[in-house]
Image 1 (cartoon, helix red, strand yellow):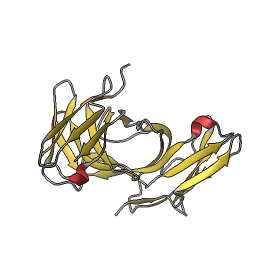
Image 2 (image 1 turned 90 degrees about the vertical axis):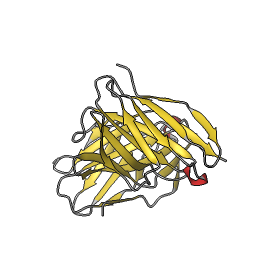
Image 3 (image 1 turned 60 degrees about the vertical axis):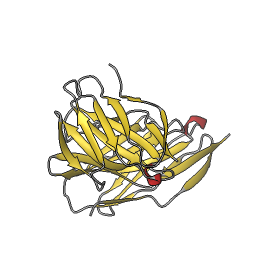
Image 4 (image 1 turned 180 degrees about the horizontal axis):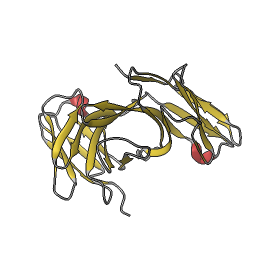
Length: 116
Length: 115
């Protein structure tokens, strides 16, 4: 069965520092997609970054980058120059194909708190 | 471009009652997925609707049912509510049932409390 593991329930980081949020996954499917979402206290899931299993380079989106290590089944999110507005829950997720459907499996999340 | 909207934002019900949650998909999207997010956990897939048909289902009992309308908006119905149904219900829309990067765009969610 496919699974996402986030081992950091919570993290505190000083403003302007870089932070790495850990994510490991397990799948037997050779084709898959990995996502990171941000969920502020309002509840909405905000898409941050995507990495396809066949992508040769690590994905980057502004201050977000995904450290994709396929052999280790790891997909860590790196946020550079953290800001107070980065305080939120962060979820690592994987796209799973179940017949014709495409659902996303989420990890348990990491609560990131940025200190001024 | 109109984003995903959900209604109501908050809802309080009692055990045994029935509830209907609504979702309007993003303009141009024909697929809607529903997720349940219990407090302190990641979202869990309930089911997906593609072109008005159920297109995949997670590990949820039959009292969780849904509909998708010709305009691709969707409803989630839960019968015989239980205390454990208290959660944030998220709707996500996508252009098709599979593939791609930005494939699912989430709405703000409906917070359901069952007393």
